[in-house]
Image 1 (cartoon, helix red, strand yellow):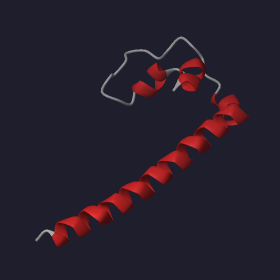
Image 2 (tube, one colour; image 1 turned 180 degrees about the vertical axis):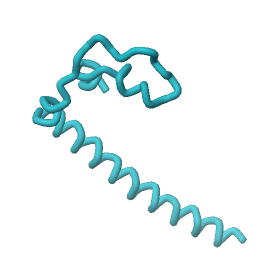
Image 3 (cartoon, one colour; image 1 turned 90 degrees about the vertical axis):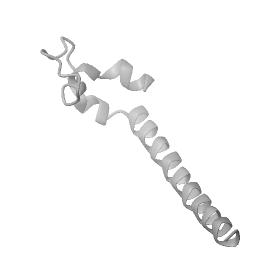
Length: 73
């Protein structure tokens, strides 16, 4: 989020949300430059990696919980 706070306008993104801004942000965002920024690429890659690892852990925990429930019946 800190990277995005410095590089994009959330107001322009929020126009697709319940916020319903009447006018776009006065700040211009060059999305092309963001997509060509190594720092942004690394931040996205790192977040996706951590989300994938969390997903694996949740699946594993779900199996443990299912086994515990089955054994306590």
